[in-house]
Length: 337
Image 1 (cartoon, rainbow, N blue to C red):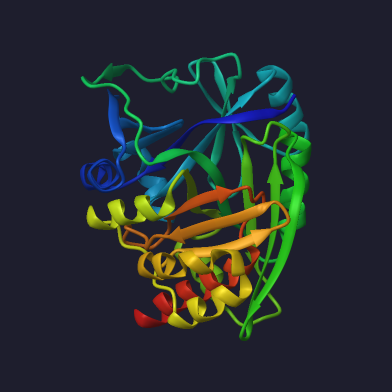
Image 2 (image 1 turned 180 degrees about the horizontal axis):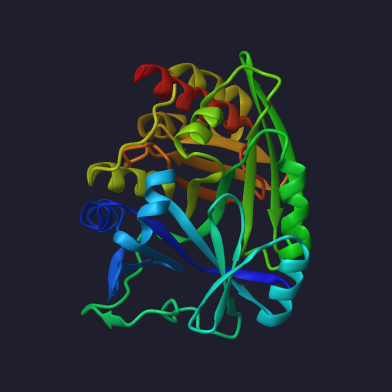
């Protein structure tokens, strides 16, 4: 009666062609299959273990009008779908329309969870569509799998949602963090499945502080939603160089960050020049190091961005870098005002 893995993530977009082009040409995904229905069409993209569905069409206009381009479904594999459905509904999830006999339940905001059996093949096509395979098939690139999904929630609701994901899908609280930047502040709680394959970083602004970038996201998204997808890579320096060369735009990091990095993490002293050149952030915990970098949002309403993350033993989420991310996103926000 628990979630085991993320089967696929579905992105709703008003213009599928440039969205697909960005993932394929700039981020190294492979177009695996297409599906066309009466009111929508979808493309299945894959890289490593990540399955990403890109969908557009009149059938999703209400979502797009309300939220802009963004993640609409995080499909979860479950050890027992029927039992997980009952448990999720008992915990407060609303049953939505089923897809090809696969139940769909509400999650946060207008983001749903399609429930699929864990016995299903990891490369199985998402259910409920008539997929037409594309020549070439899957190919391994820089991205290995989804490390975590960051979910932005309204202030004061973190505990409620952490409890919901525990009771509905068996995700336990893994860590928590409170970060203040100037007059702003944010709370975070990480919830994770026992398998370690489903990790949600729940973040929310502190309503007692000044409005900041999380408040801006909630306004643009008209409520809770997926703030970013974090992709695990083996060599972030190589990945950033490649993706930047292909057109991915990353957030900038101040030079002062790298001036202090050698003192903060002495073991990385010899890598500081490369990290600064690529603007990669670094952190450590008791298990090892963590390297990460965040992209700018490629979407009009700035409702979704991406992260590259490399784990050198670290099991955490870069708590020292949460501040750097907040500061970087805040600079971006102020620059466009």
